[in-house]
Amino acid sequence: MPGLVSLKTPPDTPPLQIQIPNQESSSDPQNPKSRSSPIPRRTPSPSTSRVKPSPDRSSGKKKTPEKPKLDETALDNPDLGPFLLKLARDTIASGDNPAKALDFAIRASLSFERCAPEGEPSLELAMSLHVLGAIYCSLGRFDEAVPVLERAIAVPDVERGSDHALAAFSGYMQLGDTHSMLGQLDRSIACYEAGLKIQVEALGETDPRVAETCRYLAEAHVQAMQFDEAEKLCKKTLEIHREHSAPASFEEAADRRLMALVCEAKGDYENALEHLVLASMAMIANAQDHEVAAIDVSIGDIYLSLARFDEAVFSYQKALTVFKSTRGDNHPSVASVFVRLADLYFKTGKLREAKSYCESALRIYAKPVPGTTNEEIAGGLTEISGIFESLNEPEEALKLLQKAMKLLEDVPGQRGTIAGIEAQMGVMFYMVGRYGESRDSFESAISKLRAGGEKKSAFFGVVLNQMGLACVQLYKIDEAAELFEEARGILEQECGPYHPDTLGVYSNLAATYDAMGRVEDAIEILEYILKVREEKLGTANPDVDDEKKRLTELLKEAGRVRNKKTKSLENLLESNSQRTKKEGTRRWAGFGFKS
Image (cartoon, rainbow, N blue to C red):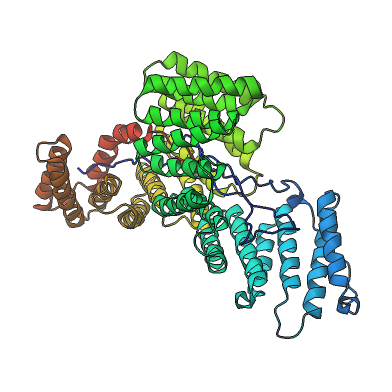
């Protein structure tokens, strides 16, 4: 009987955060804002140039005040638009009344639109729409910001010179940030690419400001787990900065940290280590102790991946000393190093030390220092849950994931991260035999991934496969077959037909077809799997022998009237339950996804 195979999911990266642009100087093809990218869990630190203020998390829940009636004739005054726009900016800067700022920005946009020369693009209108979109985002009303910013993009004519190019570039980047906050990474990347194209046409391909935008786009590709595209952009960024920046510059260090992230994700650990060491040397030359410590943590991660455990411990302890002395014993950065040490000691068989470090990290997250964000705490809890899962304590892991979910419920732009946590919870529920809750968790994760444009990623295919496994346990065989078929199509496209994950879904689909009585379809799939495994692993491999036995059994059954469909399903469940649970214990780390 063909067996069900649980897949290891690819690593996750946290989603992009929205930039609420400074209204006096929007993103600019001649001076793009530097932004600090979030650092995915268990990965090297990427660029530190993408710091963005978080939107107001509570104001989005407030009732929108009724808009005052506008005096239509007053809007025809050409002096009114600039005046209202200045009032909107001043109100934003004061932070007093965002609803009033929104009203000023709406009226300013209406005034600019009425006063604009017919048939002529108005840069003032585009600017006011950028401000209006930013205010909507600060209120957490991202869906309302999207049409405003789409309209802002349509106003400038890039053929009319650099001012129009600046307005179009700024609009695309702001719209990309907004889509990112909605979890729509594919649309976000499309906007960034359009903005980059305009900037390159305006400034040329080797301008340092183009490099900043390339790095920003590369970070978005990393978060979407599109590492080949990210690597190309990182190389271009490094080339530009080598030409225009001094040796060991901050810009080059940021580029190398991001390149290390990409190399690690692709399994190229030696190159990742080389980039991190060069980045560390640049930060040492600039006396940036905190940055050096952060890079040391990333270097420790690479050593851990290479099983160079002593060197990993040294790097982690070195970073820990700096973080404790400069930020205090209860800072989240200290907790993050504890989590890494816990993972290291688990992998070296020192389970008591691993659990002790987990408990130390949990004490810090339980009483966070002022300024610690919910995202930081949730990310840490998700990481620790993975270690408890490895320690065979799934119930404790579930509790931590549920706490992480609760922390992120009201945080904008965390759809992808929440989907990753729900997928992890689905695995945990499966491991403890709570198959109905497992299926529900996977279903919720899948709906969020579909809404966020992730329906073609390898991770999405993996989650579909996991939900199919849960459906099999619930005897929902038709639903399981549909999920496996969809997963097969995605993984064939993203990973190729010979990838182990794709072959695992093939095996699951063959088992399901057999349970449904579609013996010929099951035989066809198993023959293909056997052929591939023989080519890749050799005929003496135990996995190949196992596939041969399964295929032989099916061929025998196909030679007579099939009357053991129920038994086929029971065999499918019994023979693969333990195997799937073992596979499910592989670490899912959170998406912003690490799952």
